[in-house]
Length: 358
Image (cartoon, rainbow, N blue to C red; front, top):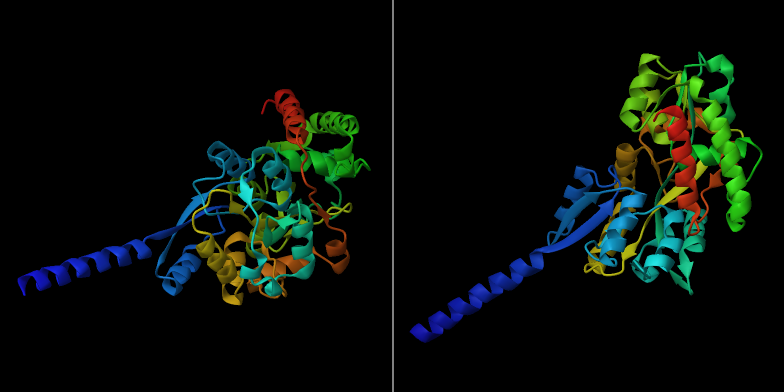
């Protein structure tokens, strides 16, 4: 009898250990700073108590660097932008194909799903699906800069000392469009693209006296706009939407050549160990309640059917103040970045920084 009791006790302990092991599965997210709000994580873990969510905040460049360093290990679900997958995977082999049958793609906005699939299909396999989308463009206090409509207007002498921009690739691309060029089409001809960059560098260096300060993050940009130190800037739309809630004179302005549009995605790192948990997270954040919570956190629009309608009321008002239907039709979606392009852009930006002391 003692033997039987000991055996039963051992089996009970083994059962506890197995159960604990099952409950210890971790979903390791590699994502943007606002894409895993605590309330959404808590609801997910309540629905799936056998999954613990571990979040690492990052950005496009860091995501690629982290996954490249490990060969796609260390994370189970990543969220690169739609233009940062194709070339990065071909060069570094860091992702694996997705099983679309395990994702509720019927909930996704068809045009955004089709766009991401077109950008991330390699040898017939799809490597990403859309999560949220947004744009980069201009922001202005319309009581002080009512005529602002072009990237080039940031350098108009009438706004001397009253504008801002971030020295990243977005301002290079926006300046190229303002010059009448199509930088994305020029990706296929690196000599032409270099000529476009050289011209953009020249214009942006000449613009330095217009710039009150070059912003590096949303907080410093917001502070300058709210204080009135600047009246216009290059910006992410989400920053402008937040400020609109504090001052309705500050609005996002889609440039006349089209706001630059991005789609942040879901992609599976090649050596991820929790694919099923990753699919559960994807489907969970496609649910309406969670789409709204994500948009409230990030300021971006969910890539689902009716995503605009699922925005929180304050964000919806800001979007409606910024975009017409024609502006939406005029969006310029970022194109896949071929190898070598970012190095060229990096050198161009270094020239501007050297000439402006930044």
